[in-house]
Image 1: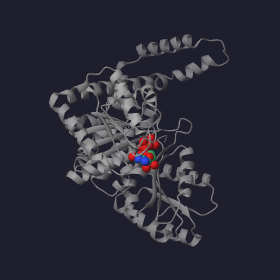
Image 2: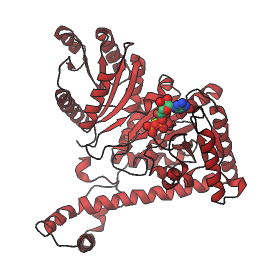
Image 3: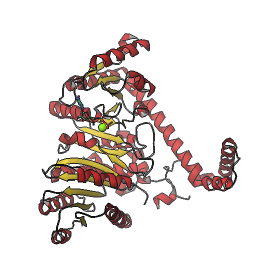
Image 4: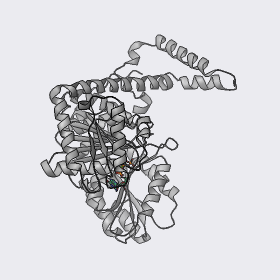
Length: 346
Length: 139
Ligand SMILES: Nc1nc2c(ncn2[C@@H]2O[C@H](COP(=O)(O)OP(=O)(O)OP(=O)(O)O)[C@@H](O)[C@H]2O)c(=O)[nH]1
Ligand SMILES: [Mg+2]
């Protein structure tokens, strides 16, 4: 508990410089630090955050199997071919809550990008976080920004119900739907309709296209969004590239427009606030359950007492936590510490 | 060491199906590992490129084509050249004990022939990665 706030050492700073200079392995390693919550990452982040912000970050969400990965491959290929633009991809898949393991399979649909040094792909598991992203997804995107990527595509988990976090983590959100992927009611339940800046109806080669597009327009009408502010609806066949160039242009156009109007800065500010809140939530949770050893206390209280109210116990846990907080030397609880317990970083 | 072990599972070469690779991928996931599934028909260059970007602890190759004596050494050579010499290269296929011994001399990890138990592969990866991480951490 007596660790000083982390300061970037020369060696850590050297890793950051290597990333900035385009060293692929250094880039991958810095991502790993972020993902492992390594205190060196938090220190490095403070040092390099000033040079971030050039990459445009595009979130891609939608139900499982809608064609998100195929679309990522298509968009990346389009931008590589037409203007040699550098691309970063973050592909998130779920961690199994039972085993802690994960099968990260998005790369299978991106195999044409593998040997292109202008494309860096990183797969991530959610590691117990809900909302379609992993805790460190923003950080991995930051590292790609530092690495100099022009456009970063973030594919969320396709769980269909809860991937809306992406809207507060990127500059523009694509919601990918497909005929046969359930109706728009399901997408509405999942909160997907609210987060879309662009709707992509993929698999336009499949039956049911017209109905889905019509349903989408109906929903947009119902929501009474002024006509000029309605998210555009584009159709694609990601598997053969049809409509992908138009989608790429629409994305670039919208980002440019928002950059010019100041809307992009406003959104990034909101995103930052959300990110800070998530970090604080995470640290508080760890602080309660790990640093303060309250889990043990709770287990003791639970042993053999079948009739206690959950509310009563929750109050008790928080009382003990607050009491412990008051007794503590405030300097030993430096809020600038990353949310890693000392045991972990040993 | 509770950070999940990251493994790239891929199937190089041009022979048919990837059932074996998928079974291995599922088993490693069930053992709590993060498995990046690289898919079929990958070249050694592509495998190493993926391994570097994903910063994996392990590369596991399923090779049924009989080309193991060229593919494993090639992937090992490229991993070393990419600065990923600490990555454990393992895998399985129809490989004779002689070939296994020969590959081990080149720095390839233990390989698993037909009829090997998946649990043995899991144990081997855990032990080996544990050692390598400790060694890297204290370096
Ligand atoms: N017919 C048709 N099939 C497509 C199209 N786009 C993608 N697919 C196929 O749809 C399947 C799912 O595509 P993915 O790109 O993996 O979908 P995803 O949304 O990334 O899936 P998850 O990541 O598992 O949620 C694959 O078999 C693709 O080949 C399309 O436009 N038309
Ligand atoms: Mg996908």
